[in-house]
Length: 209
Image (cartoon, rainbow, N blue to C red; front, top):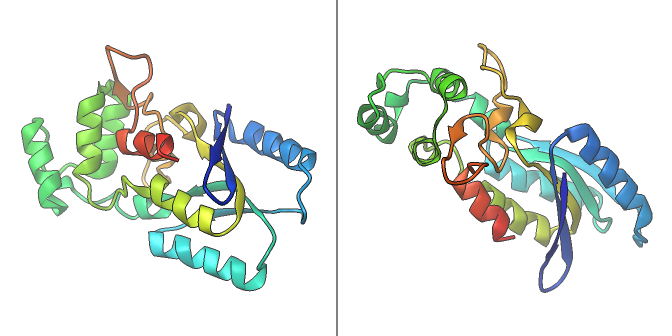
């Protein structure tokens, strides 16, 4: 688990990258108690199916708790991801093109392609091509989330570091694809040049915090 201190012009925002959520929660709780907040922070998590609802959650929070700092133990668009698992790649022109380019059946379900990558591994480049070819996957989520959090008094947030922390087993019908959340793609991608392949846009969003 890593703790990274992110600075902005007007306030500080700490991002904790966790390998195990339970350890992250414990570390964040201990850290929060060691910091002299003017008001004790509220611990919140947001899991939603649309980024607009992510913003709506903050609007609701600040309408009811206008001044206290917030600690986010988890945040993602996991329900948006789940809503697209049983669709074929050919649902989207980009997905059909990706499948044809890489010798996959364009009708393959998103979930089945995940499982192919989990079982066999694909290159880091191909994994990131796949993510870009699925328009429902918001590759800019982490950067946009930072802007919303920064504007709404967030003190600490946690985010998955690698896929051991968000599952790595094949996805069964009805499973939530937590495996899509982490910054590092160590269970679906391989990289001969570096030990840990990344979800490129999430990695760039993280380094841009």
